[in-house]
Image (cartoon, rainbow, N blue to C red; front, side, top):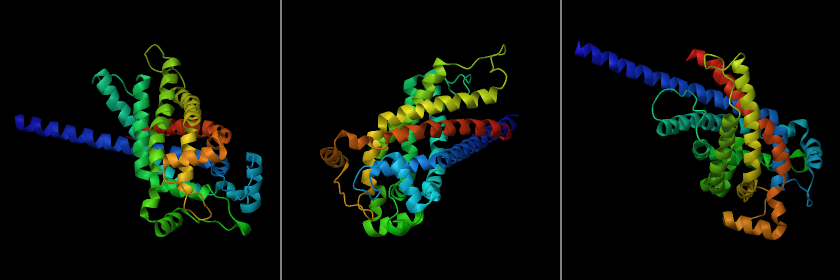
Length: 329
C-alpha cells in the first residue's frame, strides 16, 4: 500500500543517514588516531624545529640542530624531547580527525558536483588537482578554526627552552591557556590565527593536492575484475605512506616562512619573550630588518626531515585504520 511504501522509504532514508553519521565518526576517529601516532613518533624532531624557529633557547647566538638537541637533553633530560607532546596529542586528535574526515567529505561533495551523482566513484581518487587542492585547503581551514587555542598553547610549550634548573615557563596545555587568558586576555588565545588560517589553505591544499597528483600519475594496478590486485590493503597503505610523505615535504617547503611568522606572533607577550609586533606584516618587516630572509627559514631543514615521516605515518595510518574498521560499519 501507499502508506507502507512511505514508511519503508522513510526507514531507508533514516538508515542511510545513520550509516553516514557512523561512517563519518569512524573516519574522524581514524584520522585522530593517525595524527596522534605520527606526532608521538616525530615529536623530538618537532621540538628541535620549534626551538630553532622561535629562537627561544636561552642563547644569544644561533644554535645548530645538534647543539639544540644537546641543550634540551642537558636542561630537561631525554623526556624534554617530548615536551608539549601531551598538548600536541590533545590538539592533534581533534585537528586531524577534522582534517581527514572533512577532506573525505569535501572530496565527495566536489566529486559529485564535478562528475555527477553516478555512484561509480568510491574514494574520489581521480579528482582534478585543483579540486584536491580545494578540498584539502577547506579541510585545513575548518580544523584550524576549531582547534586554534590548542595550537597556540602547544606553540608556547614547545617553543621555549626551560630556564635555569629546568624551570619551565608553562606546565601543560590547560595551564598555558589559563595563564595566557589571565595575563593577556582571552583574545590572546587567538594570537597568530590570521597567518595560521592563511597558511592552512595552501598547506593542506598542497599536501592533499600532491597526493592526488601522485595517485593519478601512478595509478594502482587492477586485476581482471577491475579491483586492486593481491595485497590490496597493504598496497593502499604503502602508496599513502609514500605519497603522503611527498605531499608533506612539498607543503612544508612552500609554506614554512608563513609558519615562522605565526610562531613568532604566538610567542609575543609570553613569559620571557620581549619581541612585540602589531600584526602579521609588522612581524615580517621587523624580522626581515633584524635578521634578513634567513630568519624565516630557521629550522626549515629539520622541518623537512620531520615532515616526511610525519605525513607519511599520518596518511599510512589513516588508510590502514580506515581499511581495518570498514567491515564494522
